[in-house]
Amino acid sequence: PVTGLAALNGDRAGLQLVILIDDSARTSLGSQLPDLKHFVMGLPPTTSVGIAYMRNGTAAFSQGLTSDHALAANGLRLPAGSAGGNASPFFCLQDLLKRWPNAQEGVRREVLMITDGVDPYAVRYDPDNPYITTTMSQAQKVGVVVYSIYWRDRGQLDASGYENNAGQSYLQQVSQATGGKAYWQGVGNPVSLSPFLDDLARKLNNQFELSFVARPQAKAGLQEL
Image (cartoon, rainbow, N blue to C red; front, top):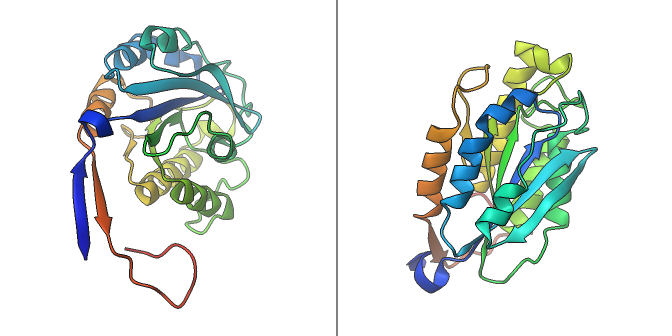
């Protein structure tokens, strides 16, 4: 039974958004930095933004969560473009989920990943990949919504269409499981991130919280709805 439906605006508009960029991404991503900065600067004042880079299995912040959007935009830089420097994008996301800075009760937490999703530890797509299922479970338990934009990395694995298809499938799997959306345009880099970022901004500004009475189950843990 549904007990409530609340628009997340006004005094419920608080949002913490981390933009998590793959430090192994091809440096052509630099051409998209103006669009990313425009997106950050256009977020409402109730949104705190942090900028982090995927590096050696961790989420390394170049700018912590802040409501100063100009300061957050200054945290954007060219990725290092070093092949395999991320270890795995999903290890980096798990690290962020475990060490989320300044988590606040009643404030939404969401992530925008920019990566190709290629996992060097599981290059063949497997819907039951334990790294991916663990990432989904951790995100669900802490209530973090994950969005992603596909951008190819450097490296031998990331040059193959086969591995990139698997990476896109993993990104789609994580986003679907957490209530987000995975954006891509074929297996090549998109011409512009603007259409994706505009759609994401609309979604962030039009979210709702649905409350309901959960039915007890015989088995403990998360249940499918």
